[in-house]
Structure formats: structure tokens, C-alpha cells
Length: 321
Image (cartoon, rainbow, N blue to C red):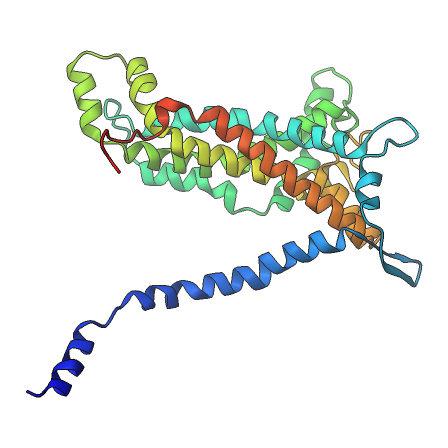
């Protein structure tokens, strides 16, 4: 075999297949750049412009600098800063739904994965719990809007029991509670399945050793389950927060586009949609989108730092480089 043949043979042997990995993941980055990154940059860019419809007349785009951001944080005639009011509405309704959801889902996940209880039919229960997540949020909201209306079944039960009709949607806390309960019902099944997967991923020998040592169920839960489940809990909490800040369809149906009563069910995305869909004010909508993006990042960071402790972080081995 001559030198040329040897060099060709060596080239064939040294072919790298790493390029195929880049080829397979390239479609994701292309789609991300076209449909997410470019619109994100465009939104940030147009937030510095005045651009809206005045009747049939298109105004702008005219560069106005930070004027849109100044308007967002300018108090109205009543002294209310809209962005702060709508942020508080959104966070309150998210907390009212997310906290019970996490607690209830964690309880169910621990029960269904308990080796001591050995509950049968887990596949059936997983399917039943996940089914509400498959129903459109708008359909869920319309169902509850009908149930709690002034002539709905709930008020009929109240009046038939000798009580007076209660307008659930005229009281801010009852309206918020209904919205939070709908979100709870829709997402607790998904959260339960995620937490069950996290618990089943824990080495079962740890639970067996704890049982042999005589540890109680509470000790196993606090000393083994929760610390090792922290990464999944952080993921669930942050994704729930992101989804909560983007809450739109349920409060839109329950409280209408004005967020009745008294704009107390108006969320940040509903406020954004009013500028985007009704007023066609793309500059203000872009500025609100940037503000929501920043708020989401800050709150997600706070949740992460709150839930992740030094004990839950992986420790480096001594002498490792």
C-alpha cells in the first residue's frame, strides 16, 4: 500500500460524526431565531417608537425614546400606577392558585409513590388527574362563569337554602378566587405527575435504609424526599410563575376586558392586549412586553434564590479541577 492509499485510509478512519449532532439540533435554533429571538429584539426596538391607529389614520412610527416607559409608570388621575396595580392583581391570583397547587400536588405525589401504601392503579389516577389540563382554559372559564352567575346553579342552591343571591363577580376576592381555582384545577395534575417522576427518580435504597433505621414517614419526607426533590420543585415553581404572569384567557372571560370588578382581575397580559388589540398602540404594547419580560426574569431569580439553598447544590470533590 503506497503513501497516498494510507493517507486516504487514515482520513476515512478519522471521520468525526459530531457534525451530525449539530445538524440535528440546527432546526431548533433556526426556528428559535426566526420565531422567538427576532420578534423579541423587534419588540424591544419598537418600544422606543410611537405607533398607533387614530381612527383610520396610521400614526408613526416616530422615535420617542423612553416616553412609552415613562407613561407606563405615570400615575393616573386617581394616583394609581397601572403597571403596579395589574402586577399585584396577577401575582395575587397566581399565589392563590399556585401555592395550594404545589402543596396538594406534592401530597398526592408522595402518597402515590409511597412504597408503604403501595397504591394500585397509578396509571388510571395519572390519566384522570391530567385530563383537566387537556381541556381548553376558555371552556373551563365559561363553565365556572355559568356555575357562579347570578342565575347559575351555585346561587340557586344558596337561594333554595334560604340565602340571598350573591354576585360572585362583583366582589374582587370571590372573582379572584374563582380564577385561581380554575388555574388550580387545570394544572395540579401536570404538577403532580412531574413531582411523582422526581420522587421515583430518587434512589430507592435511601428509602429502604431509612426504613431499616426506623425513620418515621415525616423524617423520610423532610430529610430525603424534599432535599432531593428540590431541582424539580424549583422547575415547577418557576414555570408556574412564568405561566401565571402570562395569565390571560381565564381572567379575560371571568372579568371581561376591563377586569371587573374595579380592574381587580385585570392582569398584565390583559392590559397589554388592550393596547395591542383594541388601540393598536404597538409602541406601548412593546414597552409593556419589555416590562413583563424584566419582571418575569427578576421574580424567577428571586424564586430560584429562595428555594435553592447551599445544601441542595451539588458539592465539588476536594482536589477536583
